[in-house]
Length: 295
Image (cartoon, rainbow, N blue to C red; front, side, top):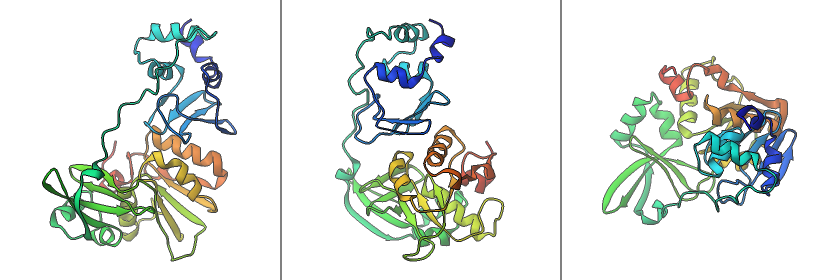
């Protein structure tokens, strides 16, 4: 078997041969529990039309060659082709749950956690370095302080709907409490027709900064709610939260993960989904656009 022959094999057929059935399907999109790691919610997607896969839990994807490389932990193309050729049932069993051991949660080791209004000069300086408007940051963010290994740390904190906080400073990016999406409504208890979707809160703050400056090239000119995923791993929660909106404006990164996420949202919600990343196609993300940092 050669590479061209291997790529003709449908990924859905290959996974079926290995004992993996889709949990659900939507058009050409097939959703599985990831064969690469343990999970209880399907986040491994195959686009049957393109014959490509993407695992949102690890932000990896590709075709059958890349999948087999990860399944069997090999980088040798000849070995991959040999394994694919053995699709009659002689393929070796998958390595059990090929995922790295997860370290103990940093949350459990944090002590004396306090949340206060955003005011620390070092954090405001960091925001200035990203061209983020300080007033907008103070409106939507807090400042969190904690002790870890007998040392004091502090970060910008952005709340999510489960009471947790996304944390960011120049040296650290993480979360305290439960990881979840964040939603910022345009008006209290009133759902808008339009919603803007972002991967991280820096993207959201970049949008607000552009909007405050009167931008019309990137920002839409209608009232809208804002949904921040906080990680593409929150895709399922994002899809649930988007239900009921007429127009979904996706301000995601101009990379494979961003493209696949938009594709997935559009696969569920159809023509009301707009890929707004074309407005800043020369930039990796909204913050790079704000800073004028082209790819």
